[in-house]
Image 1 (cartoon, rainbow, N blue to C red):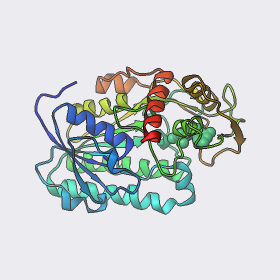
Image 2: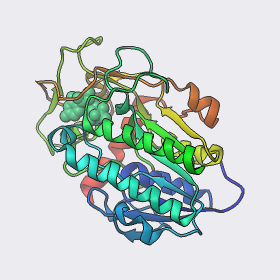
Image 3: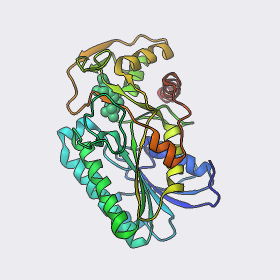
Image 4: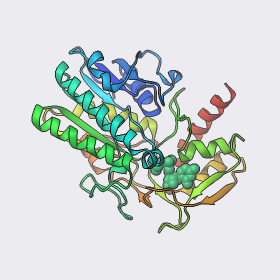
Length: 325
Ligand code: UDP
């Protein structure tokens, strides 16, 4: 997995969960990493050891970018579906406005390569099949719409100015890597929430809807280990081609229902997990599962930690360490 020459990368959002793990992989491969993060949702402790840190906003990227950077990995974003429905303006401002500023700054500094954190939420509510990159994009919430708008912006930048870019459409990220794991405040994601119940920090978990057209009526999501996801970014940096915008789904190609996830947490932790059935969460598609074909063929990437029990075990170990520290 190592690249031959050492390169210098700007990692926006590198104090967050996925950005931090990807930055750690870059550092381990011998590269220089500068993290740009405003710490609104990231944590200083989320910074991987060895990364330089700039406390700032992507809107001000022009201040921090210069021609010494080989590429930008752009993770910084507002990323909660529910919040985006309640406060869409924040998503257009941070995700679209922020990325526009970043792209402009990259062009001005002559930094010609980008790996962008896109999302399965760009596809909307696709029905039951695995999603390919040519599946229709019809986001059901402003979060997905803002990420899709950014994908369009990047495509234009590639065509007009020769940017080399890869948009990685993440499905549901899980697990932990070394000291780095999933932590949001407030927490909205399923696995860390269920783990909070296991730790006694929360009384129960709400199951958002049990009347979906799925095997047990709860939503199906494709969970991918954060270390597998991080590795894909290094592959993307290698294959990015000037003038091309490559879009690539990243998942395992299979899914689990909300109830299967809760059951897995019960097995891994041995704790009781009371659950309460709640109404559907606005903007939630019933099933989101990735086709992994493009990732395998174009990135030369295959997931190696597909087992849900393994992902939950890593997340549990991280949550326990964090709860006791
Ligand atoms: N979910 C749930 N209860 C919760 C949080 C999430 O039932 O307290 C469901 C949510 O409706 C979705 C799935 O779990 O179907 C995964 O949600 P999450 O927010 O983790 O990720 P998303 O799929 O929105 O990116």
